[in-house]
Length: 269
Picture (cartoon, rainbow, N blue to C red):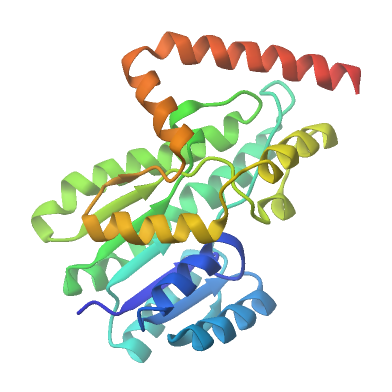
């Protein structure tokens, strides 16, 4: 029975809730994050929930830190069965306002962090014939306005996951990619963008969501158990994706209208 999981971004939000969902099944968890205080809190909650494990500070931009966590998994857990690449940061702003530094920061964490995670832990997963769970976003599929660097990073995570799905099937390593819409989380703590008004708009979307990180973690658990590749936790996200697959022009028009409304609000603020 598979019982060992590593999660990046486990110090809060969705990463913490994924840890707690699997902890309830008695899993051993390697918890990684740059937020050491958050990690300590997650581990305490994990133990209360029925799991156990260890924490390590890890910045996913640094490959050597990821390989150190992989080594710790081998030494302390005897290997690994499931890798969850969850660490991520929020960003927003119209393309003409985003700096190249904004792009580098976003891609280095949300895309390259996932690539490096897969690279560092794949040897362990090949041994255990385990699973990779990459956390992307509906932004990867719908490309909303004023978040092009976030959209591109998350679309890259979907493309990577599709590539690994094909390549690793014969190696008996399962791959899953999760694309949540906006949900109640602390993602805004890491928000980076050229205009404060953009952060407020994203904040309203997060607060208005009917779904929490707890709901999403439970949905992921169920869908991974079923063997689903693309996991879309939000009902409206599943509907929007279906429409885009059948008639993409409808979605493009909606996004253009949304961009117009956003520009008007920003110029009025």
